[in-house]
View 1 (cartoon, helix red, strand yellow):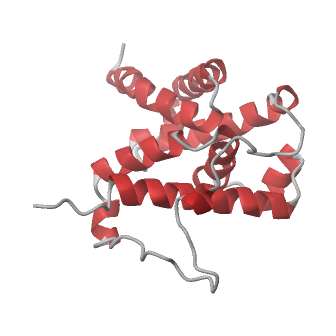
View 2 (spheres, rainbow, N blue to C red; view 1 turned 45 degrees about the vertical axis):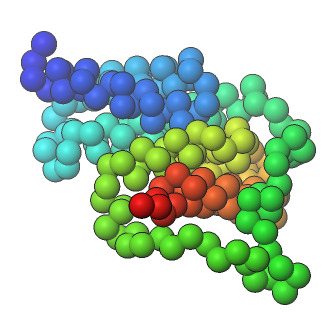
Length: 188
């Protein structure tokens, strides 16, 4: 193997983790990663060292994930999205009748500094995996795959209102998880 191939093989586990987060199906994720690796190996000249190899591969993988979502859309339940069994996010963050927080959110310190921390992204990823499957999928499609709301609604046959409600719930859950697992102040 060449150095380029070795680097791609070294990144496969990261790509698989990324794909599993997006697709929430091991077989689909493995297929998407395999297609990504094959595409990268078929045209190594397309890389051109204009970015990091990892960034380039994730860019390819995003397209493969979108293709997989489209291809497998018939295998996914097309019934209206509902998380009846899920805990209401308002249980995590309680509001007063006037709309203000009953308890102020945790101090988030310096988010710009934290965003560059690898540990922060590990906690964010762990929090994203804890989202209910439907909310996690919608959140990842919107925020990580950067699909437009219109594309997501069309792909999953959702109303824009339902999409926004689900995204709002996902963000509330992520916020609660991050406050608990990252921004919580440790007592000395």
